[in-house]
Image (cartoon, rainbow, N blue to C red; front, side, top):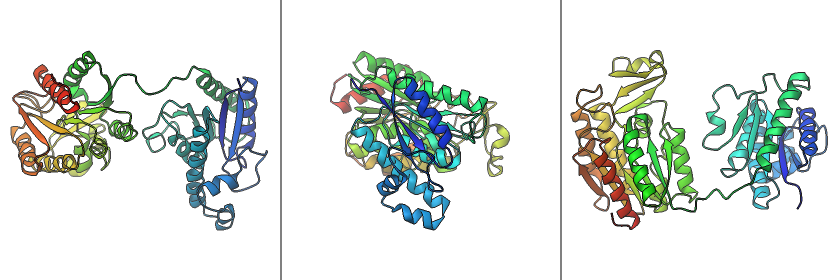
Length: 406
């Protein structure tokens, strides 16, 4: 059996010494390497296996255009696009078994773009000087490991050698482990959860597992919703129990946990059976209390913990959320049911709790009634979202959507 291969992707003009060191370390561990050059400034410090010309061509741009243009931003965008095409093709032809990259801002942009083109479970390691900051723009919804090198990647010394040895050992370990098919043998249900909807989701997951389903629970923190939508679009999900649609509130009002305008669309577009409820639409999320934008300081705020501040959605905002939800569900090509808990939509939306507002919840429901098409079933349950009987109702409705009978 031939050795597994680690792809090394990066700018061989500015980081050639470091990539050569990584290549030696990986080969010493018994794996093959395949080096992809994405530099456009000076000649590579050693010959790559896939040239920068091939990478640029994969993006549909002649390399000469980048050399003559001298637009760094354009060069990074082109090489990121080309690298994504190259590694996706190598993966499809089973030529590579892991991807390791290193760099600063440009190298990280190119390297992680290529990594995001690869499927979940494929080993991906990015040694990046940006790894100690906000990595969301680079990682997004993919299982990318970001590794901080402590120093800038500018030459080999006793610190960078240690860091790069560890990076090489990490990718070697991931590649050598026994790979398994990422698909489940059981039908898979995607569910969404927040801390304030945990009892409901936990009970629903238990019931679905008893029916023979595997349940993937996504934390509705923006990235979680995006990850779920991505897996649905990739065809890995059999049905969706979208209990916690709170990310729609952040998208509408301007909170920090928006999942973007495509949230609550993939299941409908793919005809995937779905049951939806308004979990945690009573709140918009911000960081610590002093991070709440000035325009919201007069609103009803609640310190969930020192790092999370919640803001109660208003009657008007809830009405808008009801309309938005209805419009998204109306576009569904598959079976869809919406279940409304009439006694509260989160742990802090209940009598005596800080976000209890029957008026706001009623505005949401009224908007749903007004805008939902007849093909979308609307169930009004006389329960709080975290009541056990509400979880039972959700599961029964989902099984009906799938074609089972409770």
